Length: 356
Image (cartoon, one colour):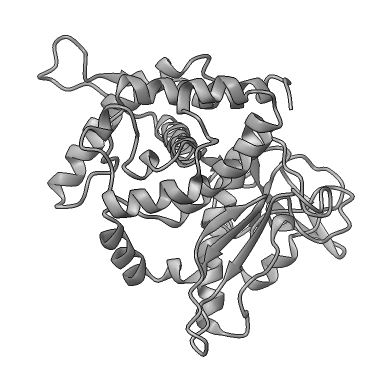
């Protein structure tokens, strides 16, 4: 994630800003420019100061304070590149559900920032009625006792609204034995399943993927039952980024995909702040790094990992000094780095104009 600048006054802007805190200009995200722009009223639409292009419209979900993106020029749907992938949203007449949906949209828009940066293929259900990417945000039904489960099914990603309840999310984290559980993590994991379909199965990389993650033809239902009954192997950290990744090759891929997005986006943010790590007690420089490169354009995974490890060593130590859990409580073994390298090759091939 980048920092941005108001074109009117030069003030620093952040991705979720709706207005400049210095000059008061309304601001919005221009997805095709990958930047925030100060905007001014122009008839029924808005004039963008970033590119002084034709009149633009705010996404229709801006009416609910759930989106701060502009629609594409010539758009006829009224929705931005992120929100046109929405299917079912919660009952927006319910203040609690509206507040929860806004939280989900914050996480979803951060997800789409990364997907757009990599030029990954993003088809809606209008583009592809059977396999297009679509999000349903559903609430539990207290009358029937139906509980919504977060998951992916052939391009349809369901996110349980109850995950926006901090207490409930923490209860589930503890129940599942997870070191962390976030809304953004859910989005990044579930979209990993979608891109396994698009980039691996349909992209001609299946054999290569199986060589790294294992045989995905193994029965998924049986694998899931076995995982919940027996847990992860004792030595799982030697080969997997998380305990849940041991369940099945599909989950291993999705977990690794999510961590790759975590790492790249966080490193970009650290680089925007000019962060560097140089411990005085580290004469050999093994715990040192200067984040002076764009991780979205890194040529190989090792450059990313070499910056990530010292950075997280430092941030974990800072968190512990505040009595907080580690920012990144995971181990990147050589086997996991190789899996991250496979994900890196997938997104890099698309970003360079390769297939699909």
